Length: 187
Image (tube, rainbow, N blue to C red; front, side):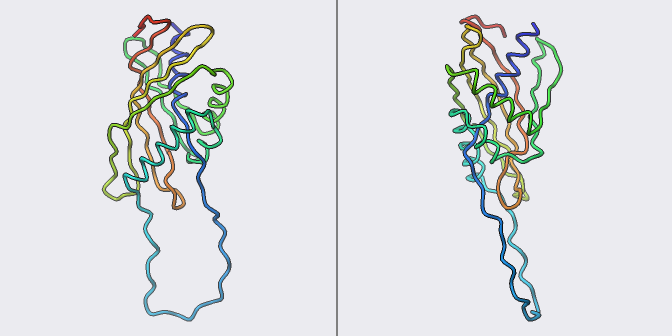
């Protein structure tokens, strides 16, 4: 039973990925300007559903190519991955931060050459203030582990927020729906 829990947790963590993104944040010093009667406010950091979909697509592309470094570029440093246990199986909720997620992605890349990953974005919800959003995904992972064919289905919720003017993944919650090993469904 513990082996199944570990495999389920590994499978859920394998759901990440991304393409690298970023911008050169250097700013040149400007000469002091004369006082102005009214100063225009800085542009608000707003998030759109299109940006969220683009970020999720980039994460999924990195997942499919085992590119942990590209995924890291799209995650906030304080990102949290939460794996919720299946009530029928029991266990505790697990959490991983940025460093653990990236290390796990590198490990999975070295272990799972015979792997496929497919996801479907069901819905994107942008918060009323346009500062954050969630994307609900259904995910199917198929891979070979220790000679056994594993198929894992999960529901995942990505939480995205604006960080330094860029959309970043700040959280992922995964809930396992089913695990089949060698064609036998275990739950």
